[in-house]
Image (cartoon, rainbow, N blue to C red):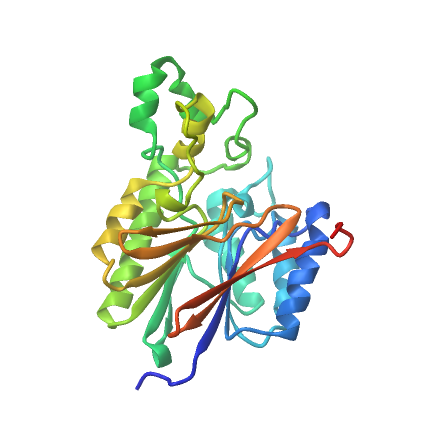
Length: 298
């Protein structure tokens, strides 16, 4: 029998624990959670690079609630001769071990089924395979296609090029994580559950970076290419009658869009401020709240 009690789920992302200019906002968010703890807490990636990943989980471990996470791209960055191994080892072994140690469900490996509410939380890091803008890139800037692999913008370079080290390329890892998520969606659907999808990289283009109204530039198309993928969108469409929400992070820009009849949210928040979305289920009300450093001007 479904529970008659409302379930309070809280989603946040891009904490970037350890970055000095964001720690005041991080502590304000944590204080609020300790004062008003949800039933389920979900961290949507870019939790804290290297040792800061565990430092963040340690702070949250005492919260008396179900705790869930997906990692972000920053969380699997490695240095040369990193003692944790390459990015693949960090993603598949090191981070799951830390999650278990501190009482977090590592969503990339198994979905979370909340049987009392006929609800499942399904998701993972998600990745990018350039498909959101590669055709347009080829049409408009055929001599600049090398930028997809080098991740080199006209101004600056995406640091995944420098700190993601593994046997995968972007397209093969995208196929891997979308395949995993597809299996988890199927599992939840076969239980007859409604599904909340949580990813770090945006689950659909509608909640990724807003495209400029003017003619696309090399940099705007490159941001799109490195944002997400069409493969996941195709899988989500198969289960759209079961999926009730999409929650993603990564872009640091809050967005809300209905996509294929599904409410989609980019949680938002940046290095210097944090953001949470609180969902009441089955009421389906979503409330947003921002957290800033106490020293920030009012």
